[in-house]
Image 1 (tube, rainbow, N blue to C red):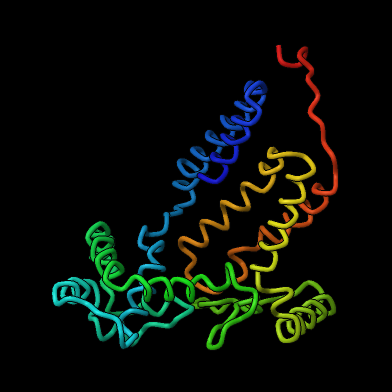
Image 2: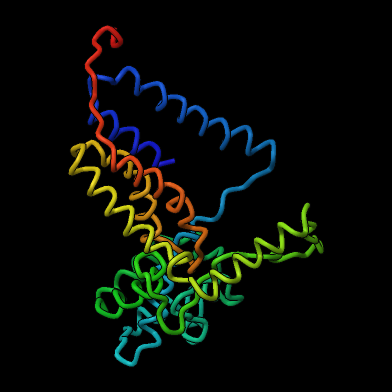
Length: 278
C-alpha cells in the first residue's frame, strides 16, 4: 500500500496539470485498501502478521556480532538481549542467510518482544553503534539475494516449492495434467541446478531494470522514472526487511523487467489537450 501511494503521489507531482485525472486512482486505491483490510478481512477472519516479523535484519545483525570474535557487548546490552532470548541461544541459532532460526526459536519470547519493540530497537542500535563494521557485514549477508548475483558460499537460494509446506492437514498435490506437471518440474529442477544465477537470483533482474530505466530516462527524460518507481521502492523494502533468501519476494520484478525494457526503446511525447482537462 505505501508503495502504491508513493508512486501515485510521484505521478501527480510530475504531471501536476493532470491532477484531476490522477486523484481518481488515488481515491480508488485508498477506498479499496480500507474495504479489504477492514470488513473483508474481518468477515474472513484474516489477522495481520505481528509487527515483529519486520525485525529480521536486526535479529541477523545481532546474531552476526555475537558470533564474531571481534564482536563486543556491554553487560547491560547482554542483559537486555537475555530479556528477549538467552544470548547463548541467539548465538547458536544464527544462520547468516536465514532469520527463521531466530524468529521462531522456542526460547524467543515473541509476546515480550512485540510489547517492547522500541526497547529492542534501542538495544539493537546500541549494539550496532559499538560494532558498526560487523553490523554492515551481517546486513550484507542477510540481503544477499537482493543485491548479489553470485550465490555466496554457505548461502542458499529458495527458488521454488514443489510441495505443500508445513502440512498438518495432510494436503496432497493433484496436478490437472501429469505431463505438464512433470515438464514444469523438469524445467524448475534444471534451471535451479544449472542456471541458478541467471534465472533465480533476482539481483540480476534488478540490474537489468536499472539499465533499462537509465536508457528510458536518456530517451524520454526523468518522467520515465515513474514506470520503475514501484519496482525500486519494492526493492528498497526488501533491502530493509527481507527475512530469507527466497526468490518469491522479488517475483514482481521479473515480470516488470520486460515491460520496462520494451518501453525503454520507445519515444513518448505528452500531448497538451487542454480540452480534456476541463
